[in-house]
Image 1 (cartoon, rainbow, N blue to C red):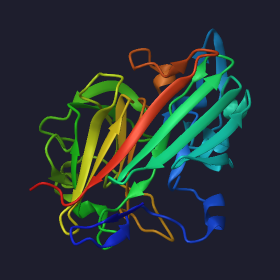
Image 2 (cartoon, rainbow, N blue to C red):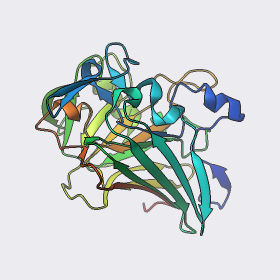
Image 3 (cartoon, rainbow, N blue to C red):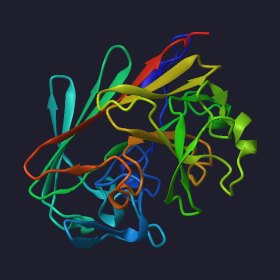
Length: 298
């Protein structure tokens, strides 16, 4: 994603591989479309309509990002249409353990105003879960600095408490006066010392302050040297902030930050979380928009 800095210099602001072959063996979900369910499902199973569905255990005892058969590991058909790229994929019933034959379309478009829009459309012949996301890793300095020097704002008053495996405990906690309080712009490295966790950075689901199902701003990221600011908008109810702690060769920890708009992790097993179910024969749609502004307001 190539955008100018405050001096007009064009640079790429997302992590990428130099060879197409590396995407086929990628283990970081680098820039990928994620689904059928973004994030983790506890014990790799959920119950729907009286039946228990067993999923791929690709993250310890849990399922993460759709399992081994997730969208990130699949090849899509594509078509170019009027300045857009339309990707399509058919996910058969039982793929990764999920119910329903699903037809998926993902539409990417990039505007002259430095807006990248990602639209997800899915239709299934059975009731099923659907929580897609875009797993791009951003570095607004174009790799000159780590993302720990970036300043982050998350439009959320609450976040999900998780256990050591990043599975929600069910508790919704306030961000106020904690290491998770990004209601105003904060340098990421300024709050990490306040965390009482093994993870140095963040792998945290923040609940959108706005409860609207329409487009709303979830987070903003800015980098002082380049003057770039990235705003994330989505129709989804939460955003996972992951600071790239587990990145390794050819990358390094904190080389990029993923801002993943999505439903709550483990939503299929938590009745008090927003539902990610889609009805048979009814198209479901979600939109994520990334907007870059230069220079950001001071």
